[in-house]
Length: 267
Image: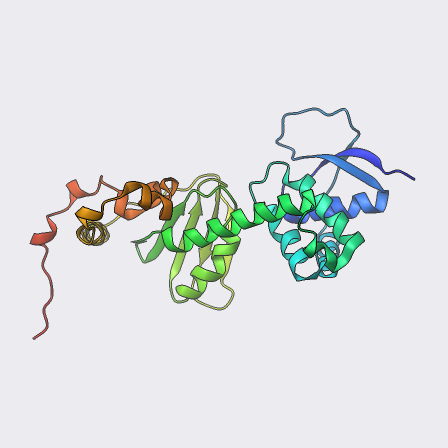
């Protein structure tokens, strides 16, 4: 018996999507569209509105263990990517996983697996880049940083920064997806939450001084005879520059010259 084609509406969260998978399997329905309540669109397919049920979402999540390590990784991380129509691609991957089990990880020539693998690679590569390119400022005892990723990289960055700064109060704001990673000292004292607006407070003189010192160091170690902007953009893509301290120019006017700053000497 063929499955009925429908349009799914859910709350836009990963648990909500997993509930779509649960309900569609129970009702033998094939989603051909996924929408959130904020989407301004109409559909020719019957609309199914799916409420998020944590118990149903957990059952689907645990079932991904049948896909093997590689299949499970793709099933979990695809939702974090910026892949267009990612819900449809993920739905197709999950259906394949239930049919093939661990073999899905070796289906490299399948169009669905190939598309999803490339999207997940892009996600993981961007997260790796931000481990080196994210910049934090000390503002009233809190380390505050901002990024503009294409993918939702905060869940992948969370283990790195929380383990690197375990004794720090830390805030990392994702401008693209309007969410922040919050961390404070202590076990499992972190969360990722959506925000409507975010604005870091003004930096103090000490923070501005360190920014200037960092920029002076960055410019000093450059070798003029080897200046190669194309090579630099290969290793440090230009889309990351807006959030990086060494490329900011608007702080110099508020600071004294680096050469006039007092420095400590050991005797």
